[in-house]
Length: 378
Image 1 (tube, rainbow, N blue to C red):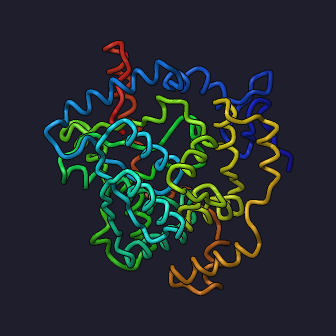
Image 2: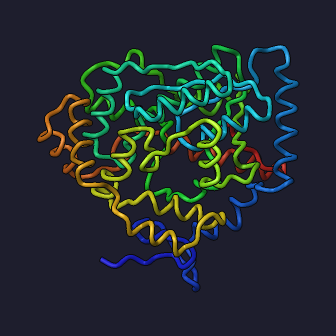
């Protein structure tokens, strides 16, 4: 089957909601130009804005031990962000959430960063029996986003930990430069606790007693309005070029590069490079490369060459399959059966999409009423 590809980026009709203009340019590129780019400041203006934000943060927390909380995964984004916070004199409470899938390289990279910065690392270890049961439930559900158990655990633990230490500034490595394009049809929010519990109720075998979740009320009211939680993505206020960031990380802390994007997690690497292409025909390199094209980090020609490379080395795939099956406590044959079962949508299970859409309508109404943009903390 032939897929139409955007003439500017490399997104194609594997996104069922993609549309093209008369020049063959897709809606993702147009959205970047008209909306997303307005919140991106890789300029002197961005440096000034960030300096003002940092100054306010330091003043606000001058009598506290920490200015903010930083989640550190060991990936390039959060690792580079850690160095920039260190250079700016910001005092973060550094937290790593171990969901059981860390690669050895990730552990070493995290250790190198905190040692270089002279920070203390707080590691939150998710109960493996509960995580294993939840992860296996997600595999059996057949939905696209298999990273929800890890992602939800990460953010829920981070916000709970921030509340414990009375910190209301959450710093994240999310960024426009490498993540501004992603099809809505390919995923659903990892923070949908209702969807998570519905999937686990149907396919799980044990109760989730220790696994922390964030519900709808917490996400949209408690944290932003009661706890006054604010999030900041500093990489959007600087010229963040991933290849240059990687060079700096290697030179300053001896950072070791992963063979694949998100190689800090064994499961995420497998999920993105095998599960999604095999089950859904989603190649997550396309939105990532497209993001880098529209932000000027990569040419379309080079992106197309990258897409010609194989997603997985065959021997590595066999090893990772066996490793994940064993860690999840199923046989290789059972794991293959789960992988090859029919796909499902998150909409096949109870979710909070209708509530989310209601909140967005209220947000837009208030924004129009006040004449300025109103956003929730997340």
